[in-house]
Amino acid sequence: MNYKEALQHNIFKIISKSTSELGVESYVIGGFVRDFFLKRGNAKDIDVVAIGDGIKLARQVAKNLPNKPKVQVFKTYGTAMLRYDDIEIEFVGARKESYTENSRNPAVENGSLQDDQNRRDFTINALALNLSESNFGDLLDPFNGVEDLKTKIIRTPLNPDITYSDDPLRMMRAIRFATQLDFVIEKESLNSITKNSHRIKIITEERIITELNKILKSSKPSIGFLLLEKTGLLDYILPELTALKGIDEVEGQRHKDNFYHTLEVVDNISENTNNLWLRWAALLHDIGKAPTKKFSKKVGWTFHAHEFEGSKMVFHLFKRLKMPLNDKMKFVQKMVFMSSRPIVLAQDIVTDSAVRRLVFDAGDYVDDLMTLCEADITTKNPSKFNKYHNNFKIVREKIIEVEERDHIRNFQPPISGEEIMKTFNIKPSREIGRIKEVIKEAILEGEIPNEYEAARQLMLKEGNRLGLKESI
Image (cartoon, rainbow, N blue to C red):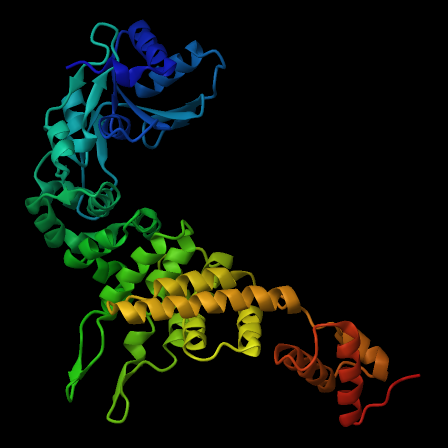
């Protein structure tokens, strides 16, 4: 069948013309073709395979384009890339690949289009449209990828054991595509992922995190994490999560399965935010429960200080997986550390002082924290569910009210250390910190307004109590 309608953009005509000038064949392959059949909108990434020299074709295309774009050549991979009209086009020569046991980097040699399609990860990514002038738009679908798109199946072109063992990252990609597209991984392929899950150890942390982030960015991340757990991959990647799995029972008392609860929280938060790092916070908010779980005959199961333990674990997890150890990590740490604060607040009478402390401690992230805590409500009891959400609504309203009146978010006490030293003619000392702390506490408790004059009077009073004399 012919699909010229997929190739309306001017770039394809220019590639076709360049192909003809060089006397070679070329095909658009992979994600662009897949997304055309899925009606997923205009792709910004296009992969072109040349039966011949892909780099030479890229240079010919650039020569024929009106803006003569620069061609970036990646000799190690035998690829070239150029940008045109907000589209990134990558060119490669058709090739065969062979792998060694301990590397996903293949030995490469020139090959046919069939060789190139054989090396693709999934049937839905092996679809190719001909760009030659004589057969422009003809579809080459040797593995029935179109049918797999219709039936929503992820399967490999060749034996899945070979596909996944050769490049174990494909196991993550299979799960990622299943999550993003809401497809099912074909049974033999899923079994093969389980069998080869240990091979993920040869993949770099950076590539694993790229796939994990894409799973987390999907509309329902739990699909991917359930597959990662089922196949055993999660044990290698995030053992902190699989440690939450299971329900213990002692003397008839049980606790909830914190692994499945976590996935519910992640799905809940994904309905309300695209913030990747807030989704990470949802994924990790309970990881401290495994190491802090204890049973007490008096109160049953406890997880005391799991938020504190979890926030420490976040740093080690990010470091191990080579994730950013900057403000993004600190944000996730803070969300995990404070994840129970609004819940405790919502269970009691919501006082101004408690809200002031919450806003002071959370700062600019108080809204994110509230979103996380609302996502943490996974009870199946309708009356409890409504009660908790109504309580959080009251807390949110109180935050707005207190913030408008007291300006607590990220506030600095109205009296600086320099002014205290000048007022009492003293050098840096413990007393300065003591006075600043008293002023801060008085503001947070609502004993004085967050204003200069009230803070100054309290400074003089506290200084006098500490035996300091005002300098005249």
